[in-house]
Image (cartoon, rainbow, N blue to C red; front, side):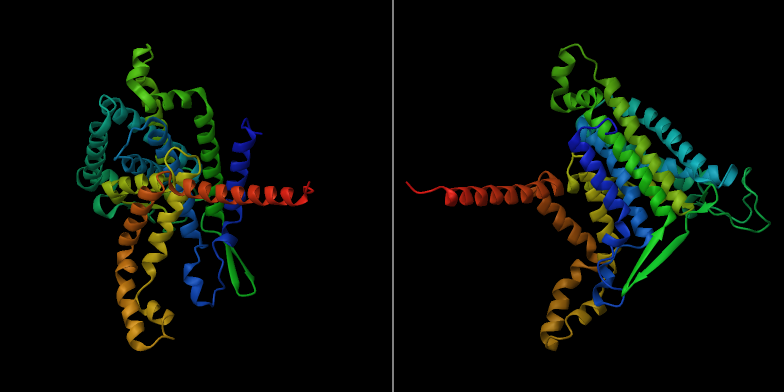
Length: 399
């Protein structure tokens, strides 16, 4: 189906079903319960899950297939965002032209950066990409202020009059898809649960599924096999007479276009852009997403992106007051002791928890969350085979 084998088709369908049912899956606890703060089924966070999933999928095409580690991918995210916001300010509030231009501009910028950076490999390539990203951030922050808005960034203003949009004087335009507002939501209350279905999320989710499908096709294509050969032994590949540079440059540009797509979708969901999207920490974040989920796997980067964004938005909101509520049934001394021990790992200290999780994954699960899932599946299969063999032995008559 869709040009994929049975295994890849099943994976794509599973991702599609999980994405479709995300408002239910991410809201497991009733609204009034103490555990409702762990629910992640609200529009803004669900949008971040799929958008950063696209970002991580694109990064994985470069890092997972070729082994080239880029520390500057946030530059393409930022370029795509700025291209999208300018298309909305000048041409139309429809997100389609904005997304198209974000992909094009990010791809062109990736072509220029990749042409220079890919002259080197290893740590030198990584440092070059980091240098380009930091230069881009500096340009956006101060030098190109008339274009980027500097420190305050850009957003849709009442004075903006896009060419193809009919806005009344003083009206602030909103991003839309042929008139469908990205903020439009429908809430469904079932018992104590409240489920929100947001148009912006589902539009971003469809784009993510298309991006995921394209990544599968790239992984399974002859082009993907050439990229794996580059990662396996680029020097031996060159000795055979094959020039690896066009393949690595193409992978770099495709990866940059994925980042631009993610940047354009971020603007489509929230029409404002700032230079912080191009800072080096944003590039480091996508590296963590790929490694946590599983470098070189299809679904791994999406899982890694979801884990980090969940911790960033949920774990960071837990404070001492909430901890005291959790342990209120304990004696005061024990309650205060537990709060004191857990305090460094939540709230503003959520990065410490992320660092510990990252360290444990790298040490015990080099293949990321995907490897963890595979190990669990093997345990159940082994147990099933053992039970089947025992049943067969029991049914065998004794001689």
